[in-house]
Image (tube, rainbow, N blue to C red; front, top):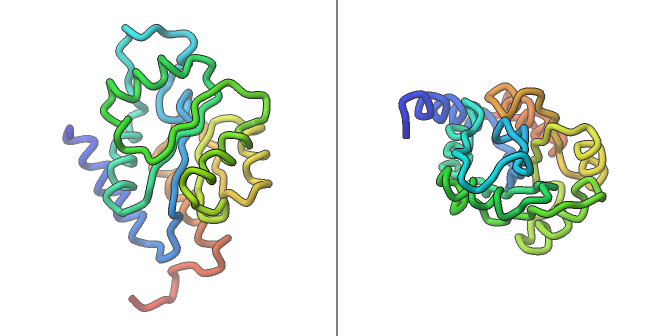
Amino acid sequence: MEEEDEKVKNEALQIIRLHQNLPSLIVFDLDHTLWPLYCECCNEDDVPYLYPEARGILYAVKDSGIDVAIASRSPTSDIAKTFLDKLGIQSMTVAQEIFSSWTHKTEHFQRIQRSTGVPFTSMLFFDDEDRNIEAVSKMGVTSILVGNGVNLGALRQGLAEFSQKSGSSSRGKQN
């Protein structure tokens, strides 16, 4: 892991440790959430790259014992999976639902829930599209809109909202 990724990972771990109520599963969109591109505009030979803080956040989430899943409406799932593999994050996920859909990811989340057994209310989701955030939120998933890819600010916001929804925040609690 590069020095900058390690720095982000450590900061993400500190953010995660602030919360006693953590999600069992964090679900990430791919295009313009983990990486700044659309898979359908690429080919399998391209060299993908993540947003600057994405890798450190993924490692911190895994090191904290929180599972990771992918929910993407990409019509080119083969390219998406190749990119996940090239980036070394394919094996970090417990579920990958990558398929084109008009359901604004509700079908993706139903499949993720069925395969993992994690209730919607125990999931946190990051995506760059309002319509997906809106639809998935209605299912009970804490959903965070990201503007410029997933970053420490989005992680902080997501965990705070998840904690608040779960009914207890870590403030004022003794460890």
